Image 1 (cartoon, rainbow, N blue to C red):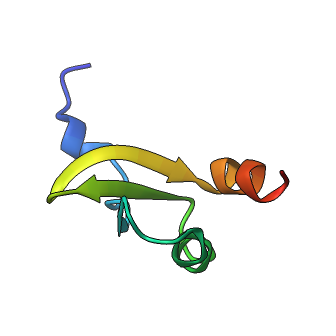
Image 2: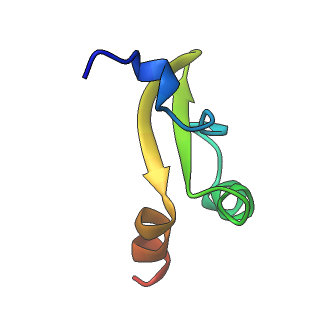
Length: 58
């Protein structure tokens, strides 16, 4: 438990703007498991494939 977090983290999430259409997220999530959602250059959330599938199944 003394290791740094950086030693155990995975590659950074790709970024997507909060105002981008769901179709952009679909394209990006074909290559990544999750996207970091940013607004005004600041992270505001994470969207996963599971999140997007839930949205698309409505």
